[in-house]
Image (cartoon, rainbow, N blue to C red):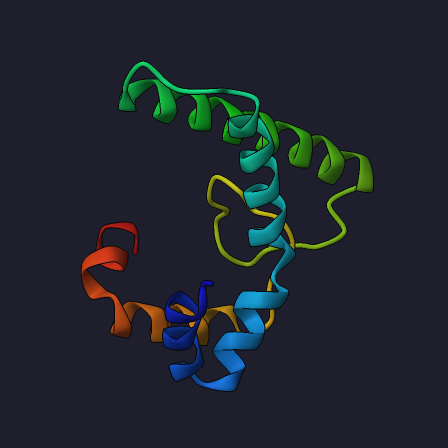
Length: 111
């Protein structure tokens, strides 16, 4: 049923596809956000959805930062962290560059 949405993904190089579908840093928050939104039947407006997701993301990051503190921050980052740090993903910079080239209007505001 989702073949038409999946086919464009195959146009990316294998390295980018591997980063995208094996990145737990993406899958885990996605799963948690789906879990939060599944409990709601409907939302009164778009702002309610944004607020719910923002609060859920803050909660996810709080849990991750507690885990990092407990682990003793074994994984040191050279660059300054963003909202959701997580573990470093192999080849993420190359994948991000390819996504920015393919979708400049979507990626530009966040880079």
